[in-house]
Length: 144
Image (cartoon, rainbow, N blue to C red; front, side, top):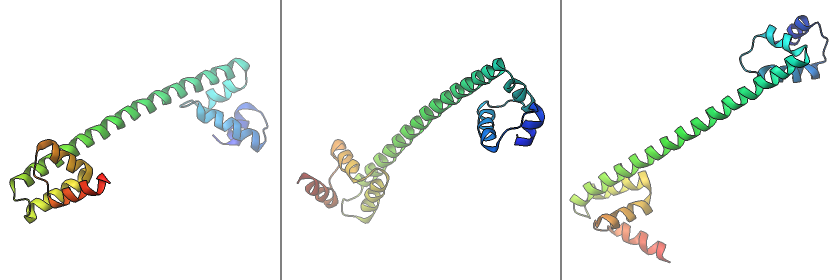
């Protein structure tokens, strides 16, 4: 709503500074009709109603925020699980090839790209896969 619309509906004359605050109040009320807002703005009880509308809107947005936050956390967790499964698959495939062959090295590199070298080395140790020279060098670098 524009300042002149507010002034026409309420028959009030407000400064630009005052209208900025009125507009913020109007926007915070959510989906309210301009006429209804102006009517409520004119009385004390109406302004209390507007405050309750803002409170409900704030609570609704707070709930939406927490729901979206939980959904994002679940999506991130699911993505991490998929990454681990993909890396596990790549390392299992690499284990079937000779440790020095290019295919095995490319599979290991792809797993490192997905989950990181520390996780790859840890997974290889947990599964009992042969360690490549790169794995041994990583362990030596990180034992210091």
